[in-house]
Length: 249
Image (cartoon, rainbow, N blue to C red; front, side, top):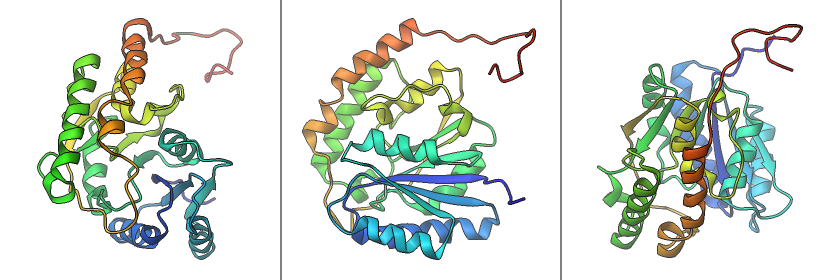
């Protein structure tokens, strides 16, 4: 029997051909010393460069590198969700393939998640090292709006660098923009959240898909949906069963 996967590192990519090999190499460098079973799961959101060909080559060399390719360009939420659904690990880490998130921080996440269900990255201390003033400002506005409407306390809710127990995602309902609200969605399900500081680097290659508009304002529609869920969704647990298996199926 193969050893159960401890950690699935998942990431979406769209036209990240120049970043994929350094990205995978950095993950391997961070995790190999830990001697844990891990996998890297990437979703190619129908790139128009040779990202998929690179992923095929990487996967042929290392079976721990797994990838799915979407039938059409579907956006970041869909790409992240596809990778999460394909992941097999006890823990799932999400980060961007553009190397602005540093894979060297993964051991810190693994240490922090021993006491929580979800660990969120906080770029506040290092944001200026990787982003322009305009991008920092747009992210600050987006964070402020998001936290105000959802009554959230996560300092850097726009940071996609997270690690969570796989059961956190079991009952999530996919919707466009969901990746921005995963800590809040986890809280709705009753899971515990914490934050740790993470490094943040300037993009070395490729082109960012986000600007002021889609960072600060495009998610406004989704905010109302999440706020509705906070007010209307409820949790329950089954205490006993008759003629039913433990998993309820």
